Amino acid sequence: MSQEPTKLRFNAAITIDVIIFTVSDGRLKTLLIKRKNPPYQGVRAITGGFLSPEETPDQAARRILKQKAGITDVYLEQLYTFDRSDRDPRGHVISIAYFALVPESKLQGLTGDSIENPELFDVHYLPDIAFDHDEIIKYALKRLRNKLEYTNIVYSLLPHTFTLTQLQNTYEIILGQQLDKRNFRKKFLSLDLITETDEKLTGGRHRPASLYRFNSTTPVELERSF
Amino acid sequence: MSQEPTKLRFNAAITIDVIIFTVSDGRLKTLLIKRKNPPYQGVRAITGGFLSPEETPDQAARRILKQKAGITDVYLEQLYTFDRSDRDPRGHVISIAYFALVPESKLQGLTGDSIENPELFDVHYLPDIAFDHDEIIKYALKRLRNKLEYTNIVYSLLPHTFTLTQLQNTYEIILGQQLDKRNFRKKFLSLDLITETDEKLTGGRHRPASLYRFNSTTPVELERSF
DNA sequence: CCAAAAGTGTTATGACTACACCCATGA
DNA sequence: TCATGGGTGTAGTCATAACACTTTTGG
Image (cartoon, rainbow over all chains, first blue to last red):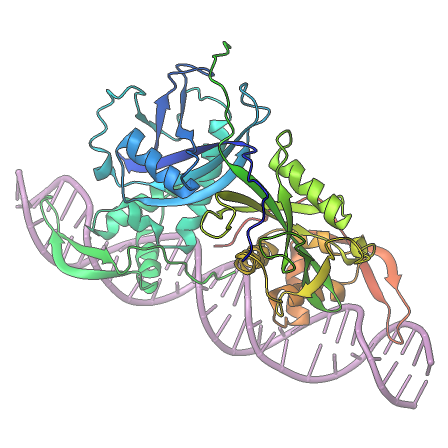
């Protein structure tokens, strides 16, 4: 294929924002840092950073996850590309937003003594947030709730084996509503996404619970029932 | 809010691609141009262009629609942001893709004598296409089919007033399947998206059809039934 | 033995599917 | 009068929603 002399000229300033969700203490939480530079210095914000010229947006999102929160190997999905031209006082900025689902176990290392002070916040009780980041979080939450209904991505928030009650709790926390135990089990088991192991979770002063595992720990899309 | 000296440096080459869908002659079609420059010179491609530094991606998408196809005031939605780093021989390119729904009436002016030779192609019989544009079209089609089910966006493909048969045909063409007339009417009318006018479409040698109009010609999202 | 969570089945309701005939018009 | 597309209702099936008691363990 013949190469033509057209030079590729950079024509935009791209940032990558990564909304990190986790379920912890019975709450859906998101990780926010404290901005160390203007604009919005000292205000909470989604983790993000500028795209490096030699990396792809996906690579940048994973780099940011690792650098800012020490997180690797998690569910990551592109959310939307937002234009910040009128919201960022620095000028014309385009933000490619992602969202990540992180099991609580991968957030243990978050010491909070990092320079940007990452902390988890209940998505229903967010502090003041820089830019229009609160709208982005709402948008991500909507996408997450929808995807719960027609994919298996909840696997990315649970340990390798889990009980049906843990699974149901995760759904209830994210959807923000109680579900009927029998109906939930019947329906979820009919989807053939999980398999019962021969192990049980003991320890409580009650009947032990069967442990299950996901058949696939890569994203699977179900047929929609429309 | 204090401005800090951080300079905004452009760090990426952004292109905007706009997949244009229309229904015509009982087929779902998309507009493709013929590339006049390498790479893929002379090959069919989605309409697109580089982002201008002073415009937002949405503005760029509308500018491209107008410049390349003479189309204004249509349904336009951001689809996904694709990374072309390994697909475009010119180097690191990021494409923000949109899709537009255009009623046939707005495509009359397409003379085909423009320098890029825009033509409509049946989405099921596409010619050879530049880059990975065929995958992008498939992705757009999937999004379009999904959105038909839970939004009113079909309004953007129909004239101001229309018959229920026209409406059903549009659904059938896009979804690629026949629908039951009685069931379709019962369900669609129950959504309260359209209202019967007191006009009828006469002209065929058969009973005249009632004309309907959409209650809202801005996008409306229905509650999903999940 | 008792407190606590695990586990299980049936009925009622509402949504979707399948299906066939009469109606109004123009030629 | 007849060919053509417009217009309508019902019964069967399937998925979802509502609902309460027994089981197993640890303390």
